[in-house]
Amino acid sequence: MSANTSSFKNLEQLFVTVRNFQTPALLWYSAASERIELSGRVLDNWVSKSANFLVDECDLESGSPIDVPMGVHWRSLVIALAALRVGATISFEVDSADVLFSFDSAVVEASDAEYPVIVDRGSLAPRFMGEVPAGALDFCAEVRAFGDVYSGFETPVPSRVAMGGLSYSALLEAVSTQIIALGEELGSASAVQFTAPAVLTADYLIQVLAAVAMGRGVVILDPTIQWEQAKVEQILAQERAVPLVS
Image (cartoon, rainbow, N blue to C red; front, side, top):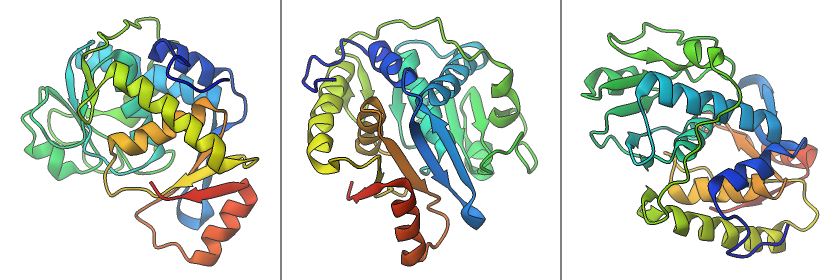
């Protein structure tokens, strides 16, 4: 697809593009070289399930704020993308929104959010493997029950803030600009590894959106693990991935 500021008229068009790719979109590596691959279609299914969860269980709607103070993980990316799909405004800090997601029980327990949601870090955990904080929703246990088609898409007001101070229109422009840059940097590579921040950021999410919209995979190495350089190089070679500084 041609990459310019008119590449995507709205986020729904972007997600349709991602959904049509059968190639890997997210490639998550964790302990003991555990590898999880989400194709574009599977990623879209998870985003749709999560968007339905946000709407039905958390009363999130277009324009609502949501706090996602989470480290980089395939689940946190899905949650953030789902929030964008709903048209919410994301904060990557604890910022007093009615909806809060966290891997950390202490953060959830201390939250005054109306809908605090705990998420397990296990790659395929079927539920939160510790004690669910009182009053919290267990994302891993509940999200699977939701449909993998999201039909509630409402085009966000272009001037409304999406995340990181960026409006939804500015977000689309940033993704299109990033697509151009990645096209020049990746060449024939099948995937890319961006330097993972300690906590999700708008810039990192924009890079991920751009890569998956191009049909390229994003390699994510669990940032809680101390990876040996030789192992990193082996994984990148296996995935035909290029490392890029975020």
